[in-house]
Image (tube, rainbow, N blue to C red):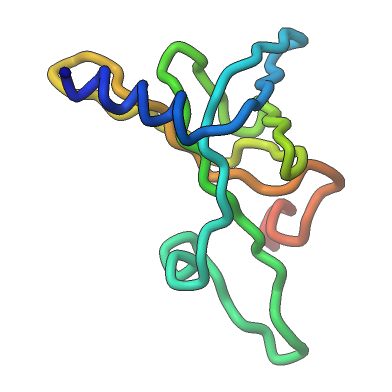
Length: 118
């Protein structure tokens, strides 16, 4: 089995049902959505405030390459909740897309880190 087939089969086997909404169109697919653990927060800007912890809740998405994502536009719905894509990239091997990964945040009102810096 090729690398691309192995990755696709793993996502189909271990991922959950999700829907991706973008530009008014909804697509159902399978993907892995899981919280980023504490050790990973140092790579995405986690920080501590003197009055307490700033909520920087983030999730990792790994999905099929045939469902493209767009930062700040794609909305992911899964059993765990509703999220918006903050950053996404497609992983390629020899110019062939293997999977899409994204960093997600809970969908909703603007969060403190979404405002423009002064």
